[in-house]
Length: 274
Image (cartoon, rainbow, N blue to C red; front, side, top):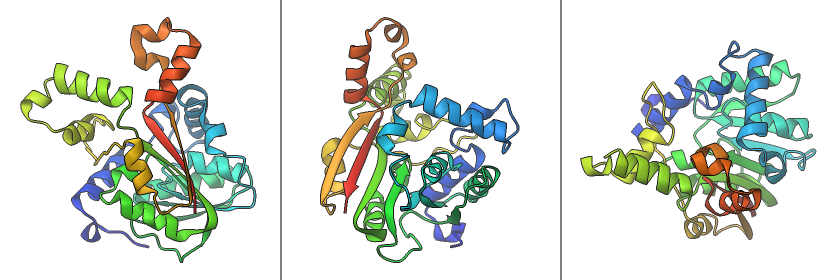
């Protein structure tokens, strides 16, 4: 599917520009040449050991052997490769041509088979009930019609299939303290007439290139409404690092930190069965 500028809204063009110039996670491999095995290994090491050590278990990378699995918004293929290593038959789609090229190369250097297509999440180029699992991590809060994109996940899933989706959480410490308090109040963005959406667009996915993609956040109630057509829904909250808590992160006990992460983390992870 060829997605060109004429068929994209302004928000989608900004999102594509953001990830075309700054592939998600690439900064953590910057000591190595982009596209080398060393580069991908460094990105992977940071993602699963430092940034989100909870991800392997909660996302179930090893729980989909022989499943037909689609990732919507595959980025550099980092998560999708974990599913492939776990035995899934993987397809990745992304709005950004650069992401498709990098993902394909990432699979090639790991000798893993995969299918990759440029596609809009709101109009997936697959027939009904084509996949056993659909995965999307940190992507659907960047598309204008998130409900339509989730409707597409539902459509392409087999009956009984699983959707695993991460969106940004409205009631997170990151949203209220980093975005609204630090950027909005202390930084004066709100007093300059900036809306919460504009602050998120500028700072949630900050880039030196100034891509300013659309960014949305969701409450648990909003998430349940988005996934109302699914037969079963479970919700988990994750993603907080001690560094984000600054001085408090060095002194609070592990049980308190775990409570904060699972209550006020930046990611709301939805597991939904069709």
